[in-house]
Length: 80
Image 1: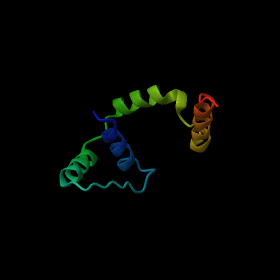
Image 2 (image 1 turned 30 degrees about the vertical axis):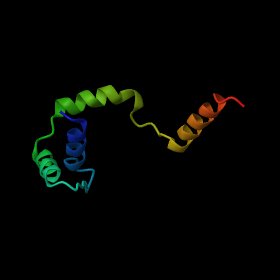
Image 3 (image 1 turned 180 degrees about the vertical axis):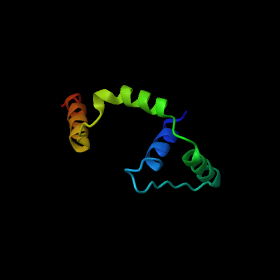
Image 4 (image 1 turned 30 degrees about the horizontal axis):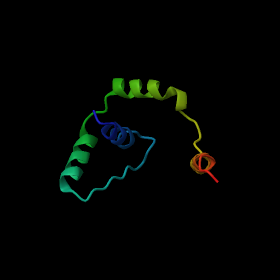
């Protein structure tokens, strides 16, 4: 199963999320996403994904700091 299907099902079938939006410029993608929404979420697969993600669940990710570190590391490797 594509992770995108699981993500759409998780968000659209979770009562904690009042709204799930998706968009596409292709009609077949819209039909596929509607079908994915209507398909029942596999609780065993969701549990397996949650177990796999346990080490990083509920962590705060500082995107800007990570980008800054990457830039600094790249600059350190450039000869002066």
